[in-house]
Length: 470
Image (cartoon, rainbow, N blue to C red; front, side):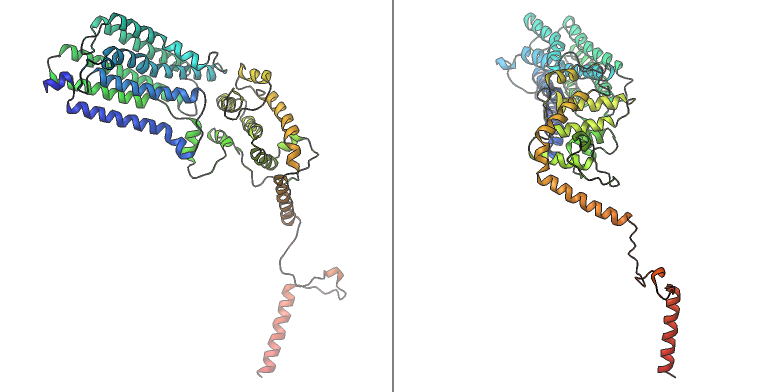
């Protein structure tokens, strides 16, 4: 036991490493499975790469602890086994530092979007290196001074500043989280931040206790083994409970596994917007007239659905989908700022931001007007973009639509609906009639009462039976 306690390779060490590898695979599966199962395209922008960086940082953190604390028995004579590679660079800037920095960037985004009601003034891919810079400077300083011994341990005068740096980043997370604590988030973002803070703080506490036990009881092998195991398991807890992979669309899809949903209506459903993209069965039947203004035609849901299918078949449906989602945004009351911001941010990320998955063709001035807005909940945020896109659809798609099979199908459906509607509301009565002659037109002026006819028929039948059976 003494040998494995010092050089690594104890059964408990291999058990901890096996659990770590399994946990990493489960973490990757948790992030990828919703996209594979529900066939959702991977999101672009910070919503994707911030989560990816957290997974990479978690993997680096676990591997660095395994290598630096000697969970596996190997010689340290090789350059790749250097303590300064694993215990300084991989565990610091590329591990715990990157993990907490990504969470701070997420909290920073939530603060600006929901508290300041505007997009962050600095892009995430620029802000993250700035937040990570103190870790890089600290790692370079430690690499220069070389304070580690052959077991990758630091002396007390070095460990205190390192722990303070960890605590400083947790305090920054607490500051941003406290600034948004009054926002009523729809998808548990605040809960995820508080959970990450709590778990990060507990992990730092476990690391401090493990360091003290290692330094004060270095001659007790059992203490060395137990503290190593506790450090690695604390990292696993940190990895799983400090990373938030939940997103609105994925949350909705987990509730709608057996239903086929249009992607353009999913955010509306997730936010509880009434009749998001649905055709109401009781909606009045209206004939479509090509001479009507195009913006008025788009307000007809049946026409809009048919026109959307036509535009999608021409690979030019992003403008119609944009119109549909802006209509959903308009159904949210102006006083409900949180839901309006959710929907506006979703529209910007999907249609307005440069390189978006369904980027619409609007002018640069209009795009910058939206991206630099001072109020994401403003009622007329997308008004100018809608005007431009309606004009574009009218010029490029409308003429081809009137001669397409989609319009013919819509006309046939409208005609059938009109006939059915007239039959239901036009006063027709298909009950069995006794006579097609009305009383006023009867030359004998006799009443054709069912009761009287029924009684006379019974009397005739009775007379016939008496004649047949006297």
